[in-house]
Length: 79
Picture 1 (cartoon, rainbow, N blue to C red):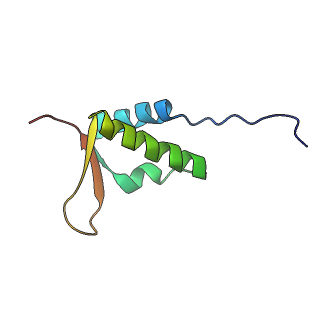
Picture 2 (picture 1 turned 90 degrees about the vertical axis):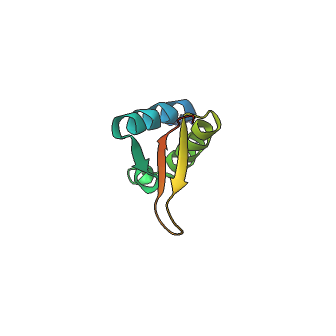
Picture 3 (picture 1 turned 60 degrees about the vertical axis):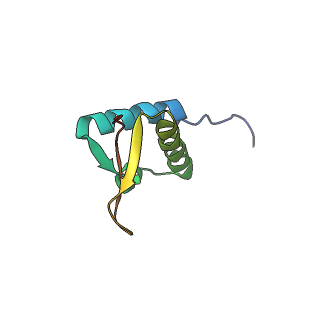
């Protein structure tokens, strides 16, 4: 039955704050590690969208040393 609507606890803003904290505490973090604790699909999707938004806002950038190597998220710094 449709007695109540379940509200998602994951927001893009919330995940952006979480990711910024992780990156600032660790200088950089492996892309795969941010999804390790994800239990449900919506958390993975929201986290991925948060990464894209942080890249767009030039808060973080991602890089990969070589093909098939780990993707790394790092603080954005202008050069």
